Amino acid sequence: MRSASKVLRKLGLIVAVLAAIALLASVPVLSSYESRAVLTQRVQVDDAAASLFGDGHRPVGSPQELVIDDPKAFVDGKGENGARLVSENYLQEKGIYPLQLRTVQFVGSLTRIGLAVALVVGLLLVALTRPRPQVTTTHSR
Amino acid sequence: MKTAITLSTLAIVATTVLAAPSVKTFKIVGDRLQYRNLVTVESESDFETFTGKTTKVSGTITYDFTKKTGRGAVEVDVASIETGIPLRDEHMRGANWLDSAKYPTIRFVTTNVKSLGGDRFRVAGNLTMHGVTRPVVAMSTVRYRAEGAATRAAGFTGDVVQLNSKFKVRLSDYGIKIPAQSAGKVAPVVTLGISAYAVGQ
Image (cartoon, rainbow over all chains, first blue to last red; front, side, top):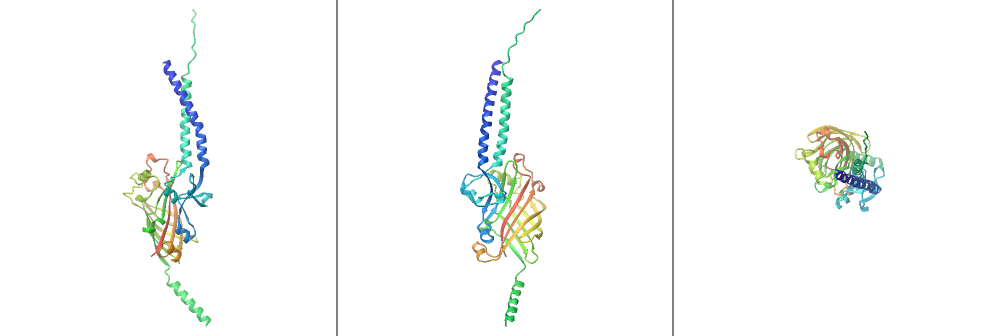
């Protein structure tokens, strides 16, 4: 019985320590994505529109914060809310499906919640299985 | 003499203007020019924003240059919509979503077109999707370019019209239920956008 609680206590400690490390590590990882994300507008380069109507970029969807590490994907010009224009043609050609900051943050939040729960469970295990001081009782008649 | 020339010039101009048809029909380009069209479906949820795209769109637009109004019908091939993730495309075309086998097209037919000045129009019409027809209103731009060296250089034969339109659609209004496994990943309201070229017939 005592050895089982010893194992549980060790397990709780390991879980708590690992969860705490992962929680701390998630901060710079998320910050890294946030610093690389740029408000972008995906556009289809349209030479016909450019020559006929003087507007050569057709928006594909609405502006989003994307993580795009390839500088060649960007084209000249600005979109709605100052969004940088990204060539949809280039992304398609290179098979790039850009990471969305929204997805990173969503997954990051879920991961943090999971890690926080693991940390609490680990700490509870440690607390509940800690050796209790033995109480000596003396009976007097 | 000068008056005679002016009058004859006016007569020629008047004849030309009167002879020019005030109502013209344009057909959305296909085949080799199809890649110039773009239809998008954008879903914006907490998890992600994704945009389905296709160039497979067909239809006609009739425009009355005098009254500044028109009518038209546009059809989109559902099975050709791609979102960038093949598995998601498969799910989207499946029986639980758009069911492209049973409902192969999304169709929009105008009921009222009102000029808002310049190239802007308020277009009311009926949208048929997933076998359900409902009225929608879309703000659109229609830009016209008469046939010339520029249109020919761009690969078009005839006068060119560029149509741009965007409107929101609630999927449940069309009997489309988001499957449980995609809950939170697909927005209940999506934005449909169209940018297409049509040439005069």
